[in-house]
Image (cartoon, rainbow, N blue to C red):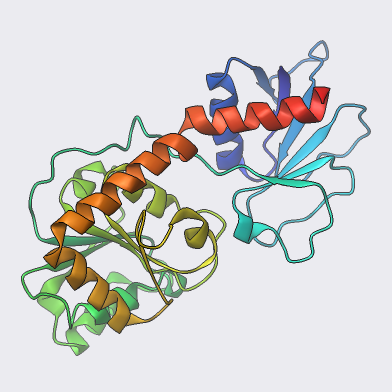
Length: 290
């Protein structure tokens, strides 16, 4: 198929979609590189739909929970079931955002006693849930929170840990460009988001890396994690429940390994660039030629 991809304001979504489509052998051009001779079979807009009339089917990728829905769209693509608004009337399908399973993959674990939580220091990321949970977690283990300063500074978060008497059991690394060495050190991965988000990149990377995931039961994380199968879900902000789950996995390594193995298998079968590319191909061929 010939596919024209318009990035709009969501360049990351456009890049991911292009990689998936190229993986399946489609001819894909961006709006910035296509010339007047390129006649697409379908136009994929990541973000807002470009103005102008077209007799070519238009697909709009909605990656934000508060997206704008264009009346010119023939098909809306959401990243998960939870991202589809209640009562949505348009023609819609779900195509998940992919994770690069060739970059993020299981490696032998270092055996270090680390509970890893990626995410910027913002209240919505819920890191204080993990910090407070550490007051009840096996004292041999340390939490490592990885992310740039945002609404919170590192000093503020350290002060919070200090107020609970566990300043020596929580490390704040700041932003880290390559998370893979940290995934190899983690006994457990934690995503404690308090608000809904369409895609949890941190959650997907933890799962693809073969690290057991504990996640808050919010938005895209509910789409990503099957509770008790590919990870464990806790109520957002429930630090006691999270602490119990952490201790349970630390004491039951066979369960932790099973969850991690199931999560990796799920990523390969449903979230890899190859599998998401298959889904894109199915949807676009049905739209264009069905």
